[in-house]
Image (cartoon, rainbow, N blue to C red):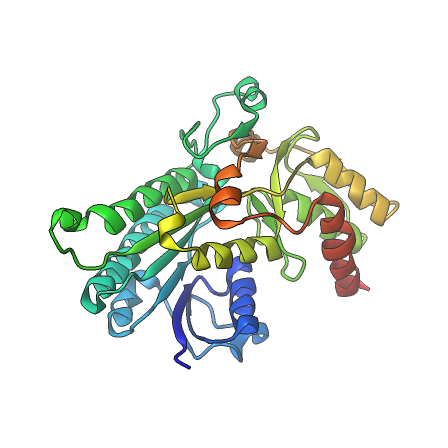
Length: 336
């Protein structure tokens, strides 16, 4: 049986490692990865080839590959992007545009719909103040698209680039018998939490950071207020959503970008779970003005009804199952 050719950029990140493992468990894929870093031991044996280096310098290599699916995960995340906006734009926008152009070229050359899966973010939304945020409720894909961070601006713009390269490049859709075009699909993720990788300093990482510190008996000063609330998701659900969207028949999709959601928690509720699991945990709240402002601009909850109807999305992990069956058992094992 012919293997499906897959490229995963940013493969050494939290999503990338989990996605490579998910593809390998399924079987039937030849997986090529790309990242600045060498592959960790957890996934190195699962990958056919690893391209190491800056994508903006390496992307031309991929014109020689016949990929069926591209998962473009490489990105400069929110907090880091605020520290270096120009570098974030280079990585997040220019890098994505080059990968889209490559995949669109492969689509046309081989006259097949190369699928391009793009992880977007709740950072694509933006509220001016807390009153707007709390009054918005569950936010739909086409609402409050006014990001206040470089990362959010990058993600929203790259969604638009994906639509351009998949629908309007060269206006080929106007031709009587147009060649196959790129099949762009994006998911706006909530804050993602992995039980198997250490948090990397993302703006939504205060929850898992809190529990990792508690499990090690270290004090933790949370950088947002106790009442701060956003949407979160277990990493297995994030990976499953990418695979579900990859598998979905193109004719059943009505839009290029979909919200998905699982559960919403305040920072105070994360602390309650930490204290319940690790009595005596020392957790305080010392909000950082810059990072607090970023999280305050993000929705408390996302409306994922389109994904549920159109491609069968539904999370496996609610908040209780997330803590009791996924996250807490693994970090106990890690630090025992």
